[in-house]
Length: 338
Image 1 (spheres, one colour):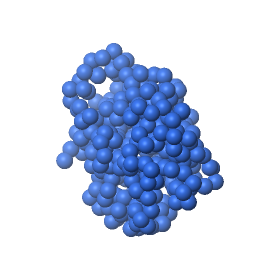
Image 2: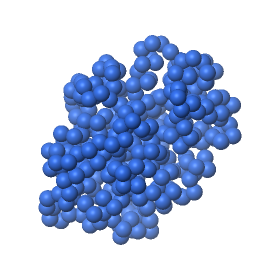
Image 3: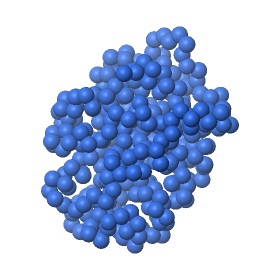
């Protein structure tokens, strides 16, 4: 399950799908000039602080030359709404979960995935009857909604161990009560938590983590969150796109090099209440894998899981061909090479 870097990238580039992607994508930037636009809108939602790089990116974006930086969607649920907002043109970029991006691309959404950002957002919490993913069969799992990141990732995990997410799991949806609250009350058997929920439950000795995607394979071998842009913005403004990517990846580096500063900024900006939970999450999540892991492996892995679960029709090759452009990442990697 280890990500394959150079060889897989070369083979994919030589494939028909890869060739189609190269024809479609904008040419990059032999003699790079100034930004084509100084405006960028980031879809940044509050429920999880794992996407800290986009929450703290504003000064880095301004340093890249953007003078009009807007954050939209701050009260929405992450995952599918983030992908929809960017694809529809209501936002230009978002850092969000990989699996909902694959579903959106399968549905024809005008998205271009540019890079992985970090690994290890989610943890599967269960009651005493659940000790493995397979134990979810016949159990109740709380999610914010069908198609939400919680639902899509839990379904992917179930499909990976041979369960049918539609038939084998009872999905509990309560728009007015968070799954973590239902779990604490014993009204559901399991739920998928995103920071700072796991940190809070562990501090209060509530429940146990069945899977921690930051450390447990195969989940720890793939990105959780990725940067995606509106396809038209990426095509029309390639220089601006590259600068957005560079700012986001610099922010990811900052989460590693100065987590105390980032945690304080998250609290001061109102993204979370607890500095200690924020600092703990920043220390637990691998924000330093964007140079090492191949983002194409992530989309391939989750597209396979979603295809197995009957949640998408496209092959992984088509998802990658229709919805990615890694050349911006390749350039930024060279520029930010340690």
